[in-house]
Length: 240
Image (cartoon, rainbow, N blue to C red):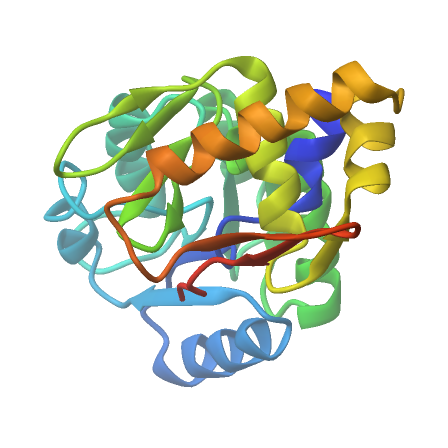
């Protein structure tokens, strides 16, 4: 059940690191991926990627050309994987030599595609890799107004203080996020999360809702309102 809840939402758009020095091909690829609802950061110089490795490196998957200026894609991949060992990578190359393929696989590449590639095929490969690494993708921080949720660590973070959630609180919060800005019936929540619906579980739900309201009290934009005889109305700020 908890695993299913994590799969209900993506905390943000999937962020792709694209490193490709060919201006025309890079632009076409970036635009196509964005049409497929990915967020793409395109770099033509690998040195620029190295500069953000320890600070702003918040990507879910990387697509690296092998032939790059100043540094080849394999060397860049080694530097990325040294900082983020489980980071999924796809290599792009204009060549189709066996040595390149073997080198990439030994580095731990998740896939390998020759240029010019079919953008639709690339998208299918990206989505296939993300399915296999779904755990990692879903554990990216989820922004909720002024707060951040780290589901795996059961942490709700805020500048004025952090809260360690119980598993039930985390599951309930993820369910509310999935149904953001909707009216939720009490029966649906109880049957989904508690798998039963009686007086005692109903009272338990009220306690957990009260706790969540308290946890989010530092952000007046966040609303969890009770609707008598119906359930709750949820309003979390939508973050990009």
